Length: 66
Image 1: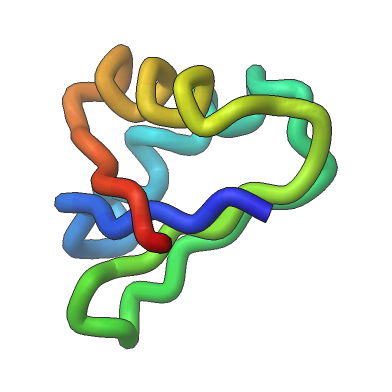
Image 2 (image 1 turned 135 degrees about the vertical axis):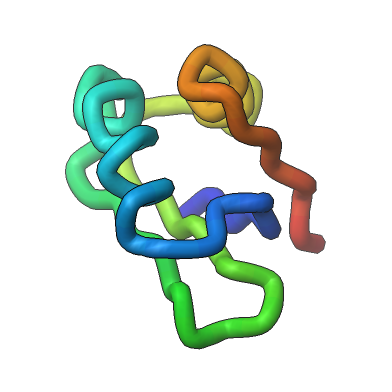
């Protein structure tokens, strides 16, 4: 599972990243908008680099959580 803190702040932002996230070879992804860091969780056959690149294509960024 990949977890990233990101700068997505609302439902409209989630809608903006949805096409890029859906294009990943991930079985499931979600955004916790109630968490102060707006955590993105991605499960499936993809890498953290691919997730970050998808966020960047949508105009957002992600920071690794370890």
